[in-house]
Length: 363
Image 1 (cartoon, helix red, strand yellow):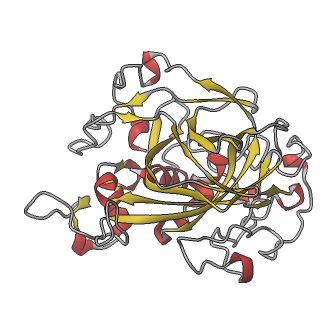
Image 2 (cartoon, rainbow, N blue to C red):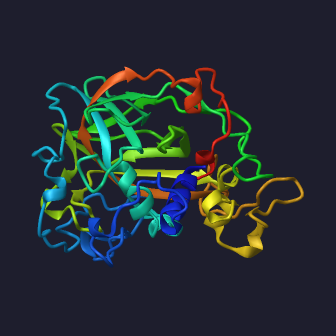
């Protein structure tokens, strides 16, 4: 289900179907630059399992912007950190997620991921895609998961809710979505520390939401996810430079950590992408008419999708999934426990079921 978000929002922006995606305007980035970082050196992807963490505006050959008016409200520190964190417990919000693979998504990032991850002070950010990390360097633990947008850009809360995305009939008639409620609760695990640099073990599954203006989340389900090569510097992971905000390649960020995860073909095939004619995410990712059946991925006689991916979830000798490779930067915030579930009319409830279908769930 992961890239459902990305593709749906991208298509929405690209074709004007919806306005809630938080599309970035043409003057927010440098025309002609992409998110692939192909300039060489620190900005070259040689191994998707180890994406280039240190790629930033300088390494990418960026020139300074003519004005910083659009980002003047961002705090003046190394990473636009909203709060100072001198202790051993560090609360972070990812302010930059730079995607390196799969290739099918690279051209969509600037209109689908970036504006939703960006802080409200920078690059027309909406904070509708908020990924939190609470790291205890003394206990060597991390709690990580999604959040709704903050009202003050400083205080966030982990989600404590579930979403039932099974009933998608009103979105894409006849499309079969996931049958079980999707849990958005955070995940806790240990970390390995080497100086100030941490790494997590493989996280079996973590569901991170992207919210639209109605409050309905679209789920990003990552499997076998690892955060690694992430270096904490005070209240920062990575570095943000206002003078490069208009660089369409870096958005002013030098990332400070890596995210490597997988999305299964089965997960992807339960996601209808309304703006792409209600094709499944799987059909879009595989991008091969011989491996699709109408708008979904072709299944075998056993009712399962054959091994059409590039990587394996649940073992080593299969190709049932696609690899997600990304780097990230993060800034200090305050995480105030867990947020209560929204009212029933907001699309989810404490019982983990959705009160009714919404167009947002398929976008």
